[in-house]
Amino acid sequence: EGLRDLGYIEGKNISIEYRWAEGKYERFPDLIAELIALKVDVVVIAGTPATQAYQKARTSIPLVVVAVGDPVGTGIVASLNRPGGNITGLTSISPELEGKRIELLREVIPKLSHIAVLWNPKNAYHAIENKQVEAAAAALRMKVLYLGVETHEQLDNAFAQIVKERPGALLVLADRVFLHNRVLIMDFAAKHRLPGVYAYVELVEAGGLMSYGPNYADMHRRAATYVDKILKGTKPADLPVEAPIKFELMINLKAAKRIGVTVPPSVLYRADKVIKDAPG
Image (tube, rainbow, N blue to C red; front, side):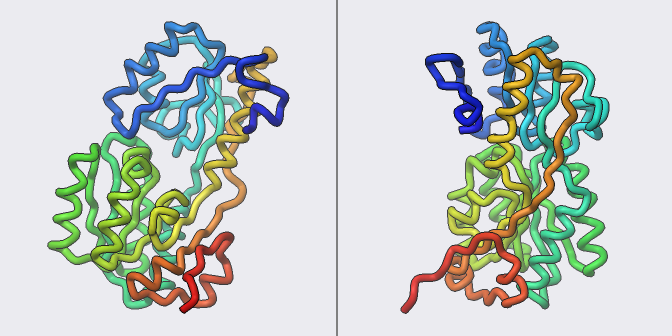
């Protein structure tokens, strides 16, 4: 969509090769090798794990990244203003993002004292995000159940832990494994009447309660401007990495009714998008 707006028409003045890992990180090296072998002019990748896999391929083909957590802290670029090397793009970084998500949960569930966090140990940025979670939870005197999940197969064990420990809410960090398995995760949350806040709107659309974060769809559209500039000769090293300016809150009132949660007007008023419950 972003490329179309800039005058690019697939099959006419641009050719696009698509590759999907489907939440399976072990596929990254082979998929990246395929793109390198095709001698493409520029690669676009979403997320920190895939970006780090691209770095390991040691190719000089320019890379535009979308929604990487902390590109400086994870060694992807030298700095946001002067990325250096052959990588630039858009970051989803915000030092207080996880804290704000936890505060939202407390606003909706005032007596909340215990939360579960789904995170991926293979995602380097999650170690940084977990520190945000720890600080916010400590400030609100909450207990945190950390559940490391790297693959689809490990979700069942995480679910069993939640059933055993009975946390009052669920926080799911931004990761392609969770995005790919969103229906499974949200069906579990609904079955166990577990309210939650999520990084992706797709989890709310799949039946989750709330999402709060940058507009990822807009980030992908914005990536087209980087592709355009690189194709016209600009070096990635000369294109500053863009940080998100606006964060969006999405609330699913149908999910709230299903799990027996009342979203207070003070939270509902701040929502950018609301999925409304059917009358009657």
